[in-house]
Length: 115
Image (tube, rainbow, N blue to C red; front, side, top):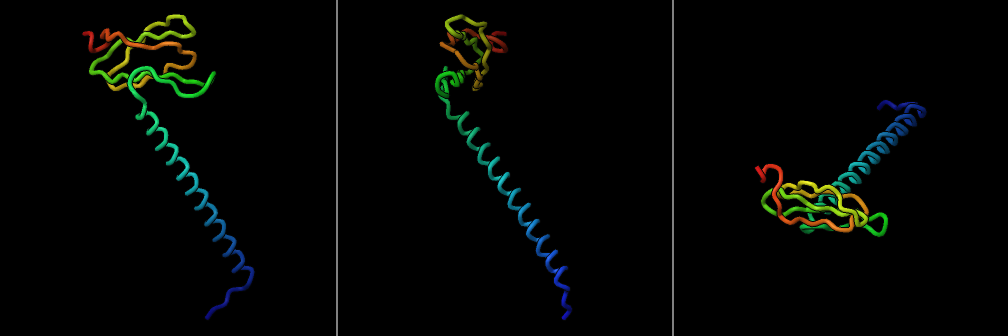
């Protein structure tokens, strides 16, 4: 049996600890990112059709999800001022931003549905 000097065995132990630390850090990052992605995609698909909002006060973000079959114009009002309408496709969810006081569709076709 060959016995290594103490300083070589110590370096070997230090190297193994470093590798174990790097593997642990990589797994932590991977698990954190994987969990975030699952939560984000789950939140987006859980929104109901039409105008919805998420958040509190100034930090409230507004969305419009169109569940109909064709593209439609969505009328948006921000701080009680009418904004240009936006064309939303079937199954599409659009982030409308903040300070939205109203968002609705009258079913008027736009885009490929209007051609």
